[in-house]
Image 1 (spheres, rainbow, N blue to C red):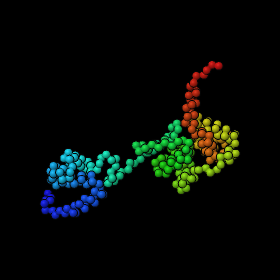
Image 2: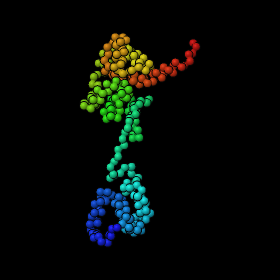
Image 3: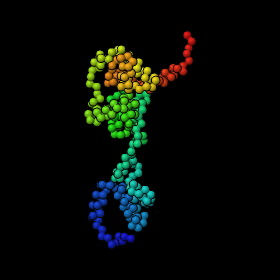
Image 4: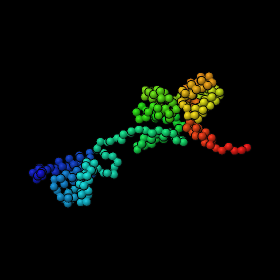
Length: 256
């Protein structure tokens, strides 16, 4: 047992040390440390309360909390995080991504949920590919959401990592695109996209380019097809078109 009467105390040093400690840890933490230390040294609660100017009930609460919770009880428990204990970052095990009526929803579980308007294609692409590059989302899932093949997602993710998001901005003029992409090509694209979506076949730009070439001989580049899929808003009906067709099948025919 420590015999404090044999110790040499300096009032000046005490004032200097307490001031320095309170500037670093805060007055509340230091007072709780002193309270617990005096209790361990055998000082009665009434004396601790008087010396530290802490209510006797608070002295009992501090001691009980430290014995029950350890060092974390030194701080104000109303705070969500500790100011001096190491911060434990919650690990994200997986990211759930899906489309709702208006937004691309990126759900990080208990951390937060991110909504991106489906019309903001460049933003959605940049965010999703950033998540892919950090290993939190598979290229296959990102491809399903963005309507790209898995191989193309890997290419885009690498471009984002090495060239920044500027690589996703199409710098070509819209009228030039329409001049090359004739009304017949648009009609065939809409028809092929609708057919593939209705029968739940692949609607990626690569798959559509292959199907259109086999069916009617048009040689359209996947890049141009992607541009017009977004411009015509076809990506918005990929999930809803099969359901609409099924509902129409179930609708009773009316007699003329």
